[in-house]
Amino acid sequence: MRVSDIPKIRSLMLFKDMDEDSFSELTRAAYVQDFPPQVDLILEGDRCDFLHIMIDGSLELFAEWNRHETALTILRSGATFILAAVVRDAPNLMSARTLEKSRVIMIPAEDVREIFQKDHEFARAVVMELAYCYRGVVKGVKSLKLRTSIERLANYLLKWQKKTGGSDSFTLGIEKRRLASILGMTPENLSRAIKTLRPYGVEIDGQNVKITDPDALKGLAKPSPLIDDPRS
Image (cartoon, rainbow, N blue to C red; front, side):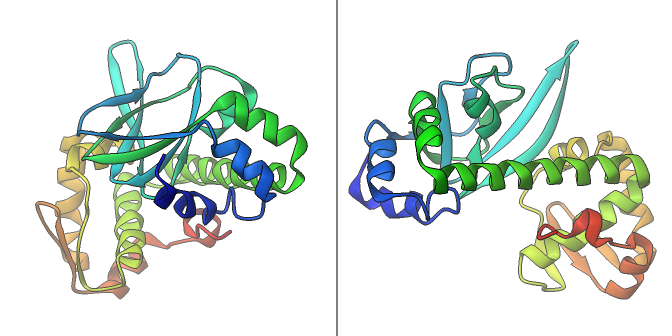
């Protein structure tokens, strides 16, 4: 791993407060690798040997069952995966593949567990990260079970608009096929939902989105801080 990569790891919430000696020990055996698009980094059911940290690029976490595949989420720079499997020394519950050229840091899982046992600040950060992820899963389940597909799409667009700076026009940054899977929809249902949102001031052309009547869209979406606010 290059010296220039170390500050990028140190600045992450998971590592920023841990002891310097513990951090050095944790990263001593870490290494960085660049991957092209469409490369499987981890496989569902395999043993989790590394904690992965995205430095550049993006990837998809997905799962398969009975010849069906579903996208679970998209991770971008600064994200770690899969921490719960690392801490529990358990098999991966998800697979991960790169969506574009990506740079990933890999820290041996055994080292993570060892430092977890003796560095209290790191252990606290791990608990906070897992709690954040757990609450994110609960929010996702609530959205899936309590909202219609149109409401889920409307809230996704409002959240993504906020993430990209709040402009009326923005880019989704994800293929519609993957977006449909993440929202628990078929591509055909997504197409119908996009048409349904037109009277609410939503124009979608490919990955380009324009929201001309945000109040109407919010009135339909009814965003809730107990589902949509990432800080809660």
